[in-house]
Image 1 (cartoon, rainbow, N blue to C red):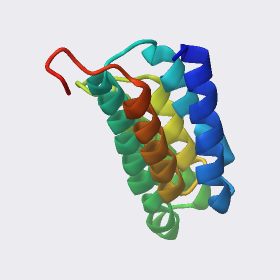
Image 2 (cartoon, helix red, strand yellow; image 1 turned 180 degrees about the vertical axis):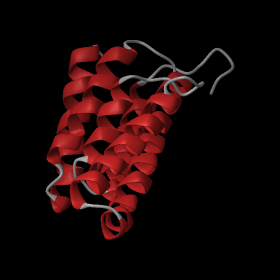
Image 3 (cartoon, rainbow, N blue to C red; image 1 turned 45 degrees about the vertical axis):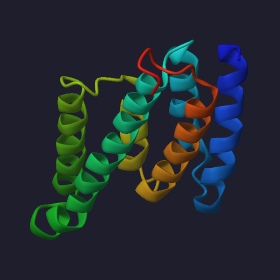
Length: 141
């Protein structure tokens, strides 16, 4: 399947998956992933989607710091602290094996207020589609 068509299908399916949470914008980083994978293997698709999931989880954890930080610190400093921690965690993820720059946008969306569950649901849909349309790896996986 042509990369642009696959990216369009991933985008539409992820928009539908995120709509119950009002999180349609979370589909865009996954569509970019589908476009960037080109004719990549299923293994590349799994690693890319894992990076999106981990980014969303790390950002969700950092966003969870905001109420505690604002209870102890002045509000502006507490909110800034959760953004600083979240951005630091997302950038640290880019230094490892799961380096996938579009995943920064998934984590950033969670930091900005999208529910992590919505991004996880969208990533699951993207994983299914990317796995279905990708060619098997040389070992058959």
